[in-house]
Length: 370
Image (cartoon, rainbow, N blue to C red; front, side, top):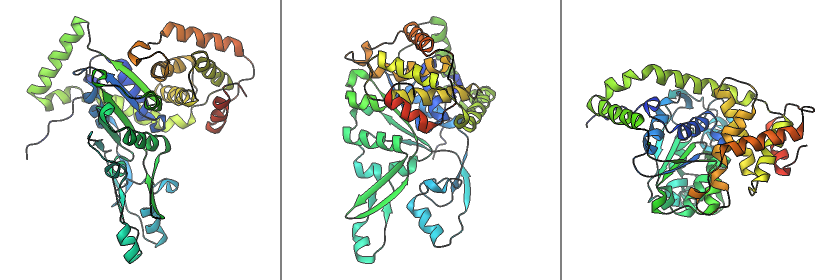
């Protein structure tokens, strides 16, 4: 079998800064809830998704578990690993790179969530589960090209798992659960049809990508791809230092993100922003906060700023605006910045305190300061 060439380096991708930022933020905190990348063919969507996987650090997993259970977090373990520990088994730990799972458009519900063997359960009293795509993707990347062509029900299943971090399968009174926390990356060409607004809203972040116009940048794209095609190994070595630098920043941000604090004033700014733009529900508020924390961690800070909120809002709001096709729902960044400054002025300088995630959820549900 011919050896596959190395993945095109993430840091070698020219332009498309918004897309790369959205991917990096999800890599830092999988709880953000994924990213939808919309754009014409040949704009680097799948290249960026695959390149991200190569950047991410290796992880510790429970050996022989098809669910990549995290040995450091028993509360997230699959039923399989729980059963093993209850029997007194010693869990062996292995270390490996994260998985990049490519979901075909033809995937069925059973293929995605997995199946329970009811016959074996009835005849032998054994609970046997055949893992699906969600099991393979846990703690990794689940990539769905042409997500707009996937069955809506299957898209719902993916988004549910991305949001909840667990997959529960129940059949005939028998259930099995396993962790399903992954970076969901969906790509699509709007010319081939769109997603329903309800599904658009459930993607945490969304970006529009288009062909680069600047001649110098286009020259760089062509020359880099020719170099890569001529000698993939040599090309990747040229970018090793930058890849390692970015990989290190992501790994450090992953360790820091849960320590990033925010104030009531920050929550008021976010809630005022989404309210003024008539964004339904509260998902956008939570996404902006999580993405802002991830960006602060990426910058090595332990508190969010207005800049973090602005960058997060740029990725979380456009696809949630009520203005017909998403392509027409562009957000003016100067307008966003002005609204953030106005909300900050309304709140004033006093009364700011640090808050935890539970406090944040209660605040944004009310969309008013506590």
